Length: 148
Picture 1 (cartoon, rainbow, N blue to C red):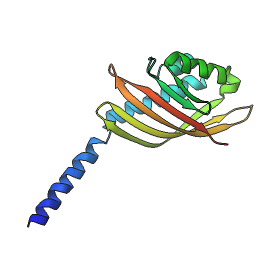
Picture 2: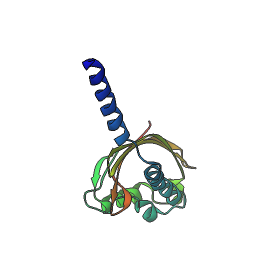
Picture 3: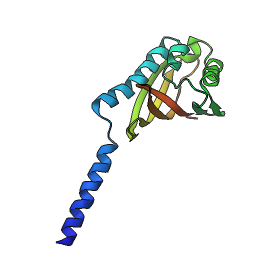
């Protein structure tokens, strides 16, 4: 009897822990809207609107092939240097591979990006930490890596 009770308690605990890591439909939609805004801004050639999805803070972290960059302004400058015009930006598409909740206000997303460009296509993967800050979901950390 004690084993059954223990299994029941452990099962209930495991279910409650996994339920806490699930985004609600509303949260999932709001987080995915961040990526949609990025995609639309990128495809319009507008890096300033694209950057609105990032936390406007010196604590923002972006890690790419050239190492980490810290801060919103530095991240924008990195994008401007790497993608100086619409031709370099091309057409962006995302594929979400994993999206889960870390805590009440933090989500973790792994995805794939594909850039179709006249100057040569590019693709890779990214990991985002997205937090709800002042009622809005913002990217606080971005680690993007290109395929060789």
